[in-house]
Every structure is written in structure tokens, then in C-alpha cells.
Length: 293
Image 1: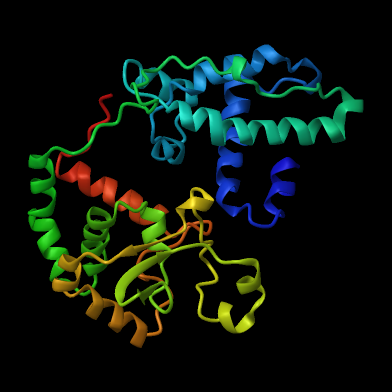
Image 2: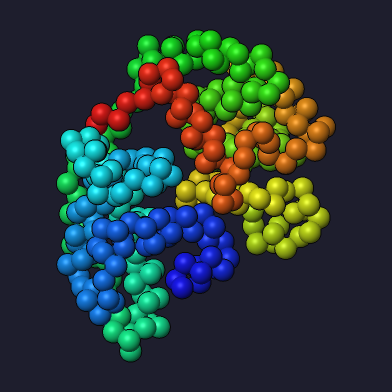
């Protein structure tokens, strides 16, 4: 009932899949499908102690129907979920469920519970900057990626050239993959003070109400920023211009494309989800994927 309720909320598509996986799958499987009046605060601590041992990316395991306990066991001794994942989306998903359920089912025995910082005892390694210890690419690794035959083939393929531009833009902007993929060539690539820029932003309330404005936007994409300060104009690097990026954009505008990479699919409003997965597979194929802290 909570998932059904959440799916009807506006502007929550991005979080819906997380709510489903955390509340509907992980919490029940780890804690057990017990009567609601038997839930207690200790269950929340047990949940976070166990769930953090999952691998960072385990969607493929879910698709295969593998049990959560088996996934955790197979991941023993390897990096698990990051502290930021646990303390932000996982905590928010579970707290939303607990609060909503108590307000509606307290008379039936649902307890008044909430996840606090004391319920999340992180067992993984944290680097000095507070991150998960994920390292940068080395110069040799970047050379291997950008001089690979795969990238050359993408550059010469009309059906794959978007994959070529994606990682080049990532290299020359530092922008998040979702920020890049949600760009609209019709209005998000423009001159600012005579300098061609990527205009990274979300839609305003007024823009969403304007049917003429929204007719140019992709209805399947929810433009998202990490924070309000993430709104910015990023100058397009001269090397991208030299390589023909503005000509690529011109072709998209002429074709009335509403996304910078229209050949990538959109999932739950997120234009960066599918290209993110494809890029990970590309790194794995080049043996450049490294989860060692």
C-alpha cells in the first residue's frame, strides 16, 4: 500500500525504484515478513548492519532472483554499499515507509519507529575526505580508455557516436552523467557572453506550466540537479569544438531531438541510468573496473 501511495506522488519517480527495492524487497527479506506489532528499533539496526554488505551494484542479482543472503555471502571481503547510500536514499526510503505506516496503522499495532544515526553503524572503510575510497583513473588507464578501438569504432558509427561524445564530454566538463544526458540540444547548448556553453539546470515551476515551452522538452525526462548550487553554465572545451561537437548538436536540432543522446533509453525519468550502465560495461570489457577501496 505504501508503494502504491508513493507511486502517485508528483516528482518522486526518481526515488520510486529505491523505495521499492529498500522497502518491498530488502527490508522484508532481511528482517523477515513478521507481524507489524513485532517490529522494533533493533530490526532497523540489524537491517543496516546487513544491507551495507551488499555489493555496490547488485541489480543483476535481483534480475536472476538470487537471495539477498546469498548475495551478501558472495560479497564477503569485498566493498559494500557506501555510507552516503545508506544514510541518504536508504534511510529516507525506510523512514518514509515507517512514518506513513504508523500514521495509518498505529491502531493495528504498527509501532512508532524511525531510523536514526545510531541505527547505522558503518562497517566499511571511509577515506579521510569522508568518501567511500573510490580512486581516480591513472593516466595509463585514461590512455587505455580514450585510445581504445571501442571508442574509435563509436566515433565512426552513426548508431554509436553518442557513446563517443558522452565520455568525451564527461572528461572535459566533470559533469555528472545524468546532468549530461538530460541536456536538451534545442535550448541547453547556447552562447553565454559569446562563449558556447552547456547550460546545466532543472526546469522552473513557470516553465513546467508553459505548454509551448514544454513542447520542446522530452516528456520522459525529469531534469534533476544534485543541489541548487549545481545549476551552472559550463564552457564547451575548445577540443570538443575542434572534434565537431557543435556540428553534432546542429544535426540534433535539425532532427528536432529533445535529448543530447536520443538513442539512449530513459528509465523512470532518469536519462543517465542506461548510459551509466553501458559505460560500466565498457570499463569492464577494458578491464578498467576497480572496486578496491
